[in-house]
Length: 143
Image (cartoon, rainbow, N blue to C red; front, side, top):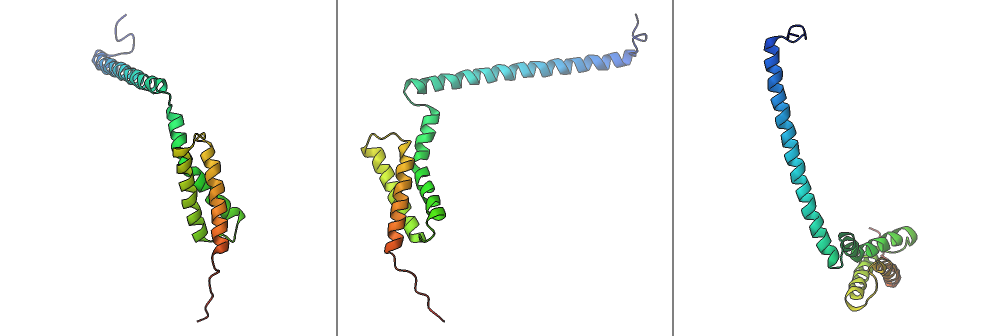
């Protein structure tokens, strides 16, 4: 069979030959990128295995860091939704007290870090309500 019988002109065959080389180069680039990606994956896997052998995981580290602050944030939301008479000063000092108690629990006790959220929330709510009740109501002056 000749090229004209296949429906491809001789000049077109040269063009297709060039496209095949471009495609082969593309496939070679993809292979190199996949191999590099696999090597990067293997390196990351080795680092994670080393971290696991040390006794900590990335998820645990992120949860520990979040536990320092999520209890205070939850406490502020609880104050806002369920205690409408709590003032800004009470909420602020409640959060400060809550954070102090959370960090004290971290440094001086062996409580699991997931309890820091509960402790922080309870301290923020208790201090926020207490400080707001002790605070004088604002005087409304008429102009």
